[in-house]
Image 1 (cartoon, rainbow, N blue to C red):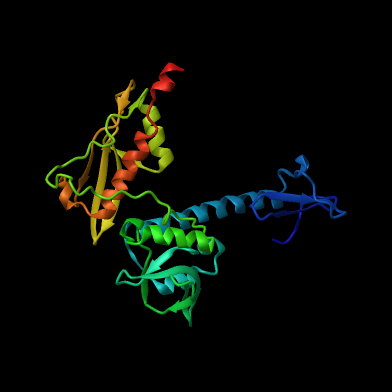
Image 2 (image 1 turned 45 degrees about the vertical axis):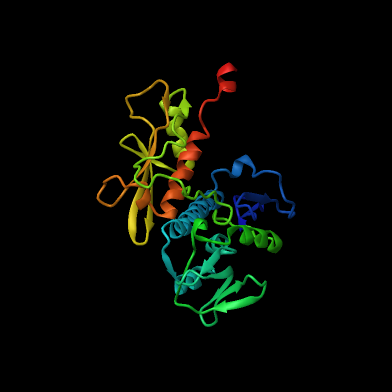
Length: 286
């Protein structure tokens, strides 16, 4: 970014590659910190506001793309092409595995052009162009060759901003009772206080409603919500994670056999993440 004059005395400020405000003096020497006398200067304040906006923008890009993936939404190629010039969008989209609308893996996304289509590295390592009107960014549980894709990604030096290839996935066990309405694999994770469990929900990005940590998933066009009991706001002492269940659009609890692979995986991911923060015997002893 270009240098901007700040205050008097020939000082100039700018943003570095990490979004930090930096300053140089009239002689062009880079200073270790921005002088205190420039803290309230309009140029410095403006750069701080810009940094905050850029950070929020990157978070929104990440959240939007993750939502496309978790909800299995088709993404118009024109949308990807339109936002590709934006560095924040490009950083989030680059190297994601994309498929055609038929679900067949096309490759790793590397570029987007309005005339030539999407640029991909396919599974043979070749650069190809995809001109489909829409693509999908599949949830990893839907990728049959996930292990092979992970190995290939290492060879390519792929680094994904959105957790796709390296997102934890859970598959419903073959012997799971399809008529059951809940799963207690991660039930009984004890916390010393409800506020600790609610705090972990917030850190992991899960909303809490009516005493349940919830994560909504749209699968095959149907909204399913995974729900894990964490406790109500009147509980201040010890609490523990409950059983995991899923509800349909009408709010009724679904039988396990009715839960799709993405909803199952995301529900179990939430339950495992909350269970992992439980109070352990070692912590009790300490």
